[in-house]
Length: 183
Image 1 (cartoon, one colour):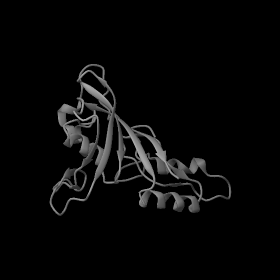
Image 2: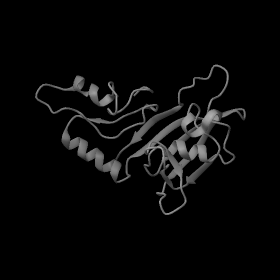
Image 3: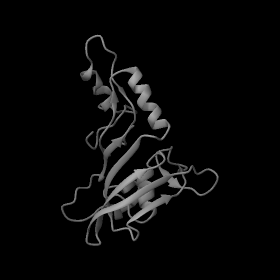
C-alpha cells in the first residue's frame, strides 16, 4: 500500500484499499476481504484474503498475536540503546476525539510493547530502525518512538516540528510495513 491511501473508508474518504478490492474479484467467488489495516500514511504490505475461510484463519492469527509484523522507519536522531524494548502503556488522548494516543501510566493505559533495533544511522541526525509491535495498539509505533525522543521522520502528529528534517528529505511519514510472518 502506498502512503496516503487509506485502508478503509471513513468520513469523506472516497478512495481506499477496501473500495478497490472489487478489481480482484473472480466470477462466482466472494469479494476479497481485508485481514488487517495500516494507518493512511504508512506504506507497505497489507494482507487481503480471497475467501471468508482464509480471512477467518488469518484474522485469528492477528487477534491471537501469532502474526508477527515488522516495520522499517526512519527516526530523528539515534537511540542510545541500539536494540531494546519499549514498554509504555497507551490510552486515547482526551479532547482529540480518539484521533490521538498518548503514554498513560494510570489504570486507563493499556499495555503496549514494541521491540526496536537500529539497522543503520546517518551520523547522529537520523537512524533506520526495525520495529516489531508485540501488542497492537493504535499508533503504537509512532507514540513509542516519539516517547523515547526519536519520532518517526514526517510524523508531525506525535513528533511535532522536530519530526521534520531539513534539506531534501520528504515530509511524508517514513514508516513502512516491511514484512508479515504468519505460521
